[in-house]
Image (cartoon, rainbow, N blue to C red; front, side, top):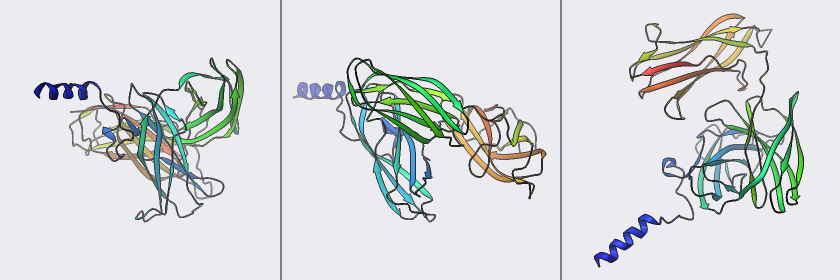
Length: 351
C-alpha cells in the first residue's frame, strides 16, 4: 500500500494536470494568465458606445492558451451596481507562451451614464500553438494629421484563411496601456504569398508607440514595435526635477516611511487659454523599482498654470519599500494629452 501511494504522489508531482479554466482574476499572482493593467483604458465611440481596451499576458513559458474569457462591468458615478455587463475575448485566438494579446470589448448600449469600468478574467484553456510563420514588416511610417503606415505581410509554408493585420496604440506608462486598436482584413493567402497592407488612422493623443501584428486560422506573426514621433512644440518644458524632504532639503537617499516631495520646475511657453491666461494641467509622478519591472507609485496632482514663464509643481510620496527607484514625471492636460515631454529621470535610494 505504501508503494502505491508513493507512486501516485510521484505521478502528481511529475505530470501536473492543466485545468480547463483558470481561477478567478481576484488572485492574479497565482495565475499563469493575467490582465496587464488594473485600470484599462476606455472611451466613447462616435455612436456613444463605451469601448474598453487592454492586454492579457500569458506568463506560462511552456504552454500557449486559448478561449480567454473576459467580463466587463460598466458603472455610473455611484459605482454601486453595474449598469450592464459584456463578455468577450482577446484579439489573438491563441496567446503564445510568455506573450501578450490585446482585447477590445464594446458596451451593449450607447449609455451616456457610463463613467467607470472594471474587467475580470473569468477563464482560459491550454492550447496547441499556432505556428509563427507570418512576418509583418513596416515599409513606410508618416505622421501628418493621421498616422499613415504601410507594410508587407509574408505568409509561411501553407495556404491560410481569415488573415488580419492589427495596429495597436499604446501610451507612455509602464507597463504601457493599450489605448486603441485598428485592423486591416487580408483574407486568404497562398503559401509563401506576400501582400501589402496600409493604415490611415487618426492618432489617439495619448499614444506614444504602436505595435503591428497579424494572425490567420493557423499562423501567428511577429510583433513589430514602433515609436510615434512626438511634436517638437509643447506648451510646457520640464526643466528640472528635485526630491526634497519635509524641510525642503534635497534628497538622494532616505529611509522607508519618510516623506518625499517630488518637485518639477517647468517653463510654460504659452498658455492654452489666451483669454483667461491659464493652462489647466495634471502632473504625474511615476516611481519604478530598479530591481523589478513594476511601478511602485503613480501619483497625480491637478492644477492651473497662470501665465507663462518658470513655475513649480509637486507631488508627495512616502516610500513603503527599500530599494533603488527611478522617478519619472509627466505633464498632461485635463484630457490626458501630453503638453510636455517626459521630465529628466532622477534616482532615489530608499533604505
